[in-house]
Image (cartoon, one colour):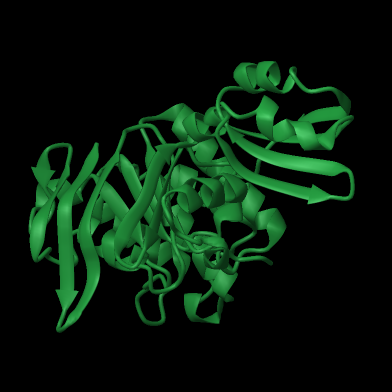
Length: 302
């Protein structure tokens, strides 16, 4: 388990991370979401011991991270722009990391290289951005560490390769004890892979919850009402997060279990009624608006 407790990091007069507390459980995919400049990269660099916190404490499996070689053997870190030795090829990087990590799976690495269509003897400086990211991910996954921390994992990957990477992460989690921590500015990239998501803004954590918990506690309802003016009275004991009307079609975002919401809306006479799945983006917008934040502008729309 990775724990950040009341962690603060300053650069001169700028507070990059402000009293952040996060717990990352083993065996989960943890997504750290935030716009550029929200503090994601700084949090990852603090977690990996590259930066020393000005306040607070960071531990991996109860071990302090900063300047602790034993703790650092437990993770592999992939920054937004992965570093490779000058003029090196993939085989040279494999040999290096095989010396650093006793758990490195060389056979698995070369199998992955073949599946991703990467040439182990080609100079890495001739790779595209996406190819470099693929290589870094293969090195990180087959290092055999318990934790993999990635900054903008899917940036530069085409849609087919993104799915391939997600599949490889899922397969690795099935085969051994493995906990990916993925920082991204694009919530949609993480929607189908994360178990737990934290929203970072202005150097602080706005929200950190299990994805299933959020999905089970917020519902989206679309309906056409026989008596549109009656819904406010009939639903007065329902926590309505958002209500929207287009023509005769009402759309409600409501807090509560599916069963409870169906029962409450059963009081209304409807011409049409349907419960719809919410995207992770919609859930986060709903949760954070309740807390007084307008986060629509935080999310990538492409």
